[in-house]
Image (cartoon, rainbow, N blue to C red; front, side, top):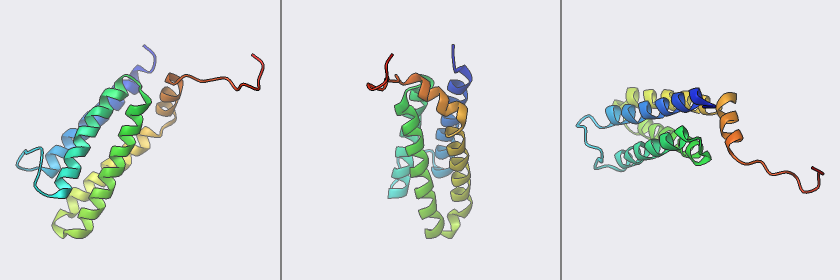
Length: 128
């Protein structure tokens, strides 16, 4: 099975992020909070789980969802970090994990796995 380590490591990173977001941002273990920031992070958990499935099957949509989720997490954590001083540590932990995930998702081996799984079309001007 080609790209097995990329599939397993990427799926593990994304599943770990879903548990991390749920643990840090909902201390009462309720998936859907009452505030807009909790709803954004609950949506991120759902997107992370979808991205993990797409990542295991090396679908380009899985990579795109993973990157979109990191952007949502970073923006939400930045807003929370500057809006409430009590949320400084959880927001910074979320940002740190999201930055690490973005670096992993843009690694050469991960990008290579997703570029190889998409069909490459020949340039019509080139002879075959």
